[in-house]
Amino acid sequence: MAIVHATDATFQDDIKEGLVLVDFWAAWCGPCKMIGPVLEEMDAAGSAAKIVKVDVDNNQGTAAQYQIMSIPSLLLFKDGELVDKTVGFQPKEALEAFIAKHA
Image 1 (tube, rainbow, N blue to C red):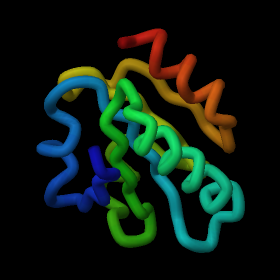
Image 2: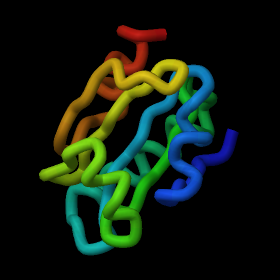
Image 3: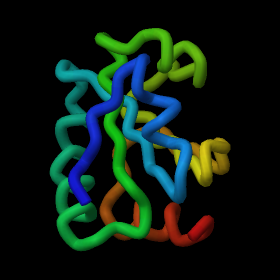
């Protein structure tokens, strides 16, 4: 499954089914650049969650809706409902455990 790049217009459709890990990020954010390859590796390995990325600079409405104050912020949705959140860089093992709690 490929990583989805969501916009304010597509976000609700992108999170409505299944387990979805959303990465709120920005191009200028150092830790965001570090977590990107981790998410790509998880996606390539068949993550239990669909991975969606939201650029906070270009999609301020969605970022404001979920009160994103720090990035990277990783929100976990299950069938469209927010079930968990973590902020800051996380190694692959920590992200897999974060997802597994709700799988």
